[in-house]
Image (cartoon, rainbow, N blue to C red; front, side):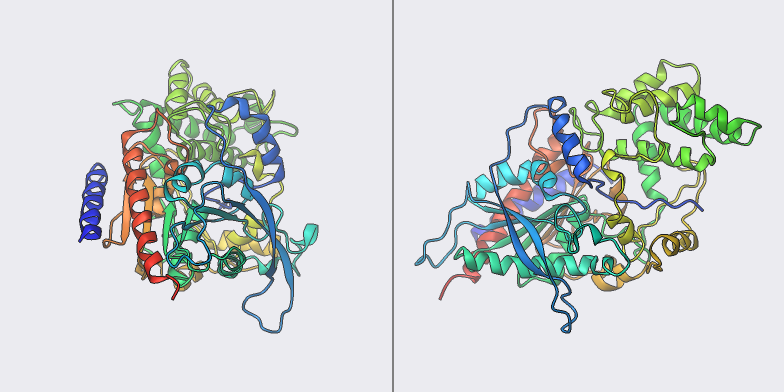
Length: 509
């Protein structure tokens, strides 16, 4: 009866939160944290961020992981990195039948696992302490230092082992092995992840309910695929609305649209690309294709919407709190629309002077340099269509083109993407599961592919008004909107409830 009473309270809070909101293809990553360069740059920029408490110390460990989980003829292995912190863990004694210290397992995504550990402090600092939990953060194969073939991991002979299915099988094999070593086989396991990691966390619970007992999938666009009913235009419409909503007249968005139209017009004129190259301080050779410029601008505007946090952060690039508001205020000081757009881009690409005196049009985030792993995934199964129509958004019209993507992928990887496989394998909008929380921020462009409606008392959707990309996983901040504070309370209560239920089911005989 007490469990039912708690659940009714939680569901009532959910209702309160959710009631507030009713030709040139780029490889899109929900969470573009990538390379070692990005790690080093984060350390250099640490003074820019508000001084949140450090996450608890961890051990860096390695597990000899199976290379191919789906081929019994293959005997290959590789060293997979994972991080463990037992600072808050209530480890069960050998004679203790019921485990009181659950496992919080982070499903690593497209980047160095230490970055996710450092940027998920609601998990590492708050949930772990509240739940007396053991923290395990596992690195995704082919990212960070978990490279099956070292520097040769991206050759055509070696990269084929990079799939979401293999990554989930890695986690399913790693968890029982680690818990057996620690005498914690009977402890509940709760998976957590954000963005692509949130997608993996949801899919992990769906595919391996025998391994993981509940999941928190933050900003997880599991419906951003074909055959799910999601309109690929919604992504760019959300970005446009974020800029539009900075004023009652929507002036910022309309002027950005005007600037982009002017850019397209200038590009068709004699010496137009040279003029644009000078206006936008392009590094090196002048522009040869206006799409390179448009793509670079689009990246800044959509990534600003993703990282529109209420306080200074360097999630993708170092930016002030509510960077869209700041950039629109800067635009308003300029009479010329293109000059106003330059002020907007400055907030994303060069707020602390990090870009120097010119802009590299191939750089969307510093960590995106030289990374092939996500590009390969986008060229095989992670086909996440995004389009613009120039009417409901401020970008020049550009429909999603599977044929253009296929041509691009065949040239780079000799692969043909399968845009339907993810939906077929994981279920799309028709998935079957229990004990998953899906949280999405209203400001986040990836909300376009998220689960936005609660389906049952154990498939719970939280919509966070004023929230950007997995804001709820970040450390609580006095500047947070009330909705994210409420969301975290619900997440904590549900995870504790599911852990309690699982601990009884898993108790030692």
